[in-house]
Length: 190
Ligand code: SAM
Image (cartoon, rainbow, N blue to C red):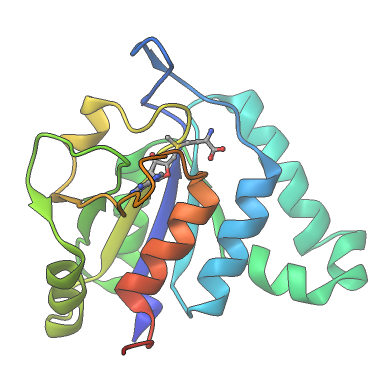
């Protein structure tokens, strides 16, 4: 069921601390953790998006090492997770790849630590809608200081922030992704 759900880690267009639109650097920790998360919940895959060829080359080398090279035999569990990663140049390319794989355009939902202006979707609605229809889902995650308005405007909705009971609202994207994936696709209920 969760195979029609995909994640994308967006490195451009994102914001820096001053609010400028930038391309952030890919970090290998994000790639490893998102790959394991998606594999654990049985998702369709994870897109690592960057518009910079040099960054894509670096990420491609890492994937080659763990998926086909020495690392694939050294750690097969890691290979199994990283096989679900693909590199894309743009959010649009990720949308097209999901459409190709699933036979229909995905609903695209953004995530943010802030209450963004836009079509806000709460976790319950996002989860119910995913279960109720056949449509694939692509969930976008930001890096740096979050997704730029240009990225948010490509989305069908923006999922409500996770919430910070202590007032400290600075989760890493890896932690945020785990919480969000569990709320949307997990089986735990009280
Ligand atoms: N430098 C940071 C790191 O180490 O991960 C990157 C921060 S990046 C802005 C965090 C991304 O994680 C956001 O764009 C969003 O996708 C997600 N995120 C973080 N906190 C969140 C929250 N409270 N609710 C929803 N998403 C959140």
